[in-house]
Length: 130
Picture 1 (cartoon, rainbow, N blue to C red):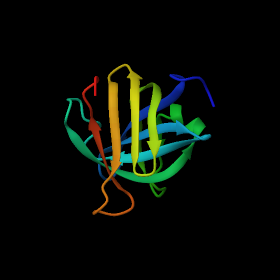
Picture 2 (tube, rainbow, N blue to C red):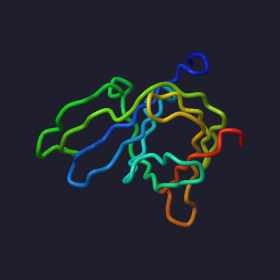
Picture 3 (cartoon, rainbow, N blue to C red):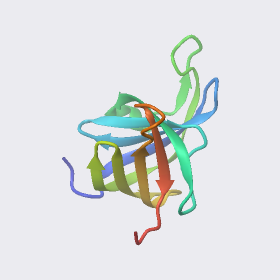
Picture 4 (cartoon, one colour):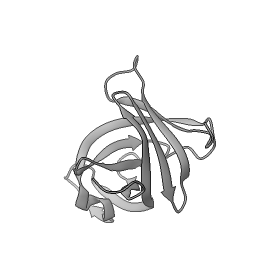
């Protein structure tokens, strides 16, 4: 594993059938991934739905371009933000990270939305001192 602050993240903006964002965190040799319909929250206390999707290969972190019609996820993909992150906690059902991106910086928390299902999470922008 890399030194703290050198694990990478990317937020892809995905212009597929349904416009959404894909939030990906480098972890254990893959990109752990969530579809975030409305993008990452920008204000402390704000929360958004995040749906866990399949892990992606690390080389997908820099992907931009068009996924052709007829393929899963068809549509244009661009990078909305990227950078590194520190892991503050990574437990089943709860992930706390400190993002170091160009647009998104600060503490973010992903928590499994227990009553909604296995793949449903909430991502929230935490207050940085908390």
